[in-house]
Amino acid sequence: MQRGFAAALGNWRTKEGPLARSLAAAVREAVVDGRIPAGTRLQSERELARTLELSRGTVVTALTRLRDDGWLHTRQGSGSVVRLPARLTERTTPWSLDRGGADDADLDLTLAVTAAPHEAYLAALGRAVERSAALLVDSGVATAGLPRLRELLAERYTRSGLATRPEQILVTSGAQAALTLLVDRLHTDRRSPVVVESPTYPGALAILRRRRARLLPVPVTAAYGWDTERLAETVRANGPQLAYLIPDFHNPTGAHMTAPTRATVAALAERHALTVVVDETMRDLDLRTPPGTEPHLSGARVIQIGSASKVLWSGLRVGWIRASADLVREVLRNPLQAQLSPPPLEQLIAAELLGDGVGDGGGGGDRLDAVLADRRARLRRQRDHLAGLLAGTGWTYTVPDGGLSLWLHLGEPTTATELAARAAGRGLAVSPGPLFAADRASLAHHLRLPFTATPDVLTRAVALLTG
Image 1 (cartoon, rainbow, N blue to C red):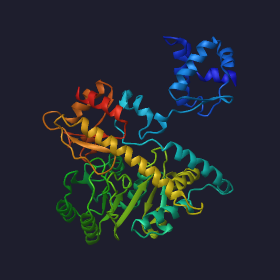
Image 2 (tube, helix red, strand yellow):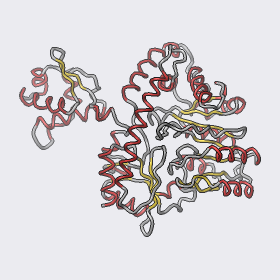
Image 3 (tube, rainbow, N blue to C red):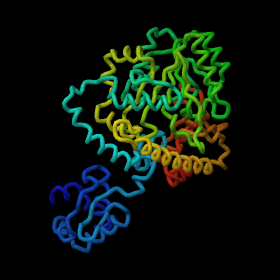
Image 4 (cartoon, helix red, strand yellow):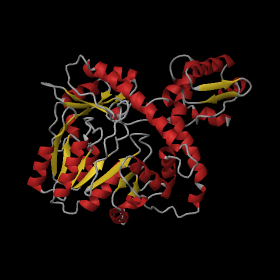
């Protein structure tokens, strides 16, 4: 144990500066890297000094630093226990993005992702492990999803106004997996074009490009939403069989489709035999007070996909398809489905986090409501902070009612690609508009800035972007 702890710290003695400071830094890095698990109980100060061949004063100074910074909890008579500080566990953005991300940037704002709700996730993990015994006597072969999770997802849809049965749900390893399976099943004629929004989610564009699909972009803006006349004209003129839309707090613009527009799109799909895949990944990230009550975009030709990754944690690779029971059975026969199905324990964790109390005596819904309320409050503050920082730049944007990012228009003459290159030279990674364009070239004067980062990081990022 003593050798193990010393080895976990790595070659920390070679760092410049006082030994106590270097030791404290080594412990922090070892905890973050998982070499020293949170919850590890340390030896006494005297034993640590002997193990590390240091003076007791140096050890006391290092432990005091860690304790003051929240990395160590000490209780009289019980010793000291390593932990993650509250400033890491009580935030909405992954800490790693503040420490280097895309292309070794010091700050990475290319990803609009959230960190896990720390305490809620650990509690859900504990409950999932307790429930896992029955899984271990089964085959573990991929199915349409654990029955409990399918029931919970069906009930969530039903409660929000879209009657759904469990057999209409297929659990996948995220929304991209769901879209991959649907495109593989529905886009059988590769000569048939696919309608997408402009801009739209790059992950969806990548899936469609791999199939060599011809893309038909239809404009969407945060200020004016969807151009339904342009959409109808595009469908009539080109006869597409498939469309991919993000009606709820659109990525990247933040636009939110009105109820009348949803009805118009559903009617258009029915009239022209157009299957619409609706990405609802952002639906729960409604930052209005109180949240709105717009219906799901639904209809006979509409399929919904969703995911826990944006609302809860990008590391929880659990998504789903909500479609007719017949289509679910057809997709289930696809050999890809087994590869794009999440492990059973992941599904159990998702069920505990998304649960409404079915099969556990109640309480799940209250837990999820508390998590969502906290996430929305933090994101709302961060969104408003970022908007305030950008107020004097001359760049234009619409503050969205939900989602995770601002969609900036930079104006002339600077292109987003040029601005992103300058920012990269200062240690900031950002996503220019062409990444979100079907043609990879338009949207040259747009930039996406997520507000998932903490206010201090957003302040640093804007200074690097505008400096």
